[in-house]
Length: 240
Image 1 (tube, rainbow, N blue to C red):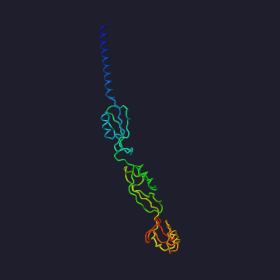
Image 2 (cartoon, one colour):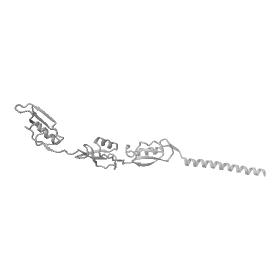
Image 3 (cartoon, one colour):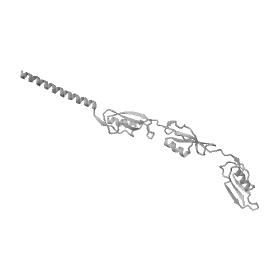
Image 4 (cartoon, rainbow, N blue to C red):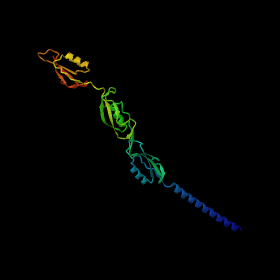
């Protein structure tokens, strides 16, 4: 009876041992299947999307691409960031999320009105835009060389590199005059006439002219009949 009991206990011990070994084997196998082999996440930053895909294939990971207008300083379809970060251990075959600049990068058009051309060029450069055509118009209210309007409205979203046309003030319109014939006229009276009409004689030269009293106009520029304004240079020669 005693020997029979020992035999039963021995069989039970063997059975328990086999069960423990089987359970441990199953646990290790499942752990390996669930965990898989670990690899380091490659550094995709700065790569084109084509380069990143090739690098991902070599490293045994997959890419999940998220495209958007993240940074206009990068070329289209360039990886600018990723998750997980480079060097982090991930399971082989798992996904690495990469943020890619879209093919069409859009920028906001700044308000250019009321600025001079130098300031406008700086604003356009910062916004990755270009200046194209400039048209000038007389304006009684806007100072000279200030932008009055722009072809693309401020705040509009446009592709980077878009050109913007400008309308620029020439200031108030000048009053036009027809240059009179000044030859033989008294120089002081000529000066008074021009000053009363908002014009200025820029150059007065005295030259000897025998037989003619001093102060008489003997030459003029522009010639009589020429259309002039406040911007024209006017000169006369006067007898000495």
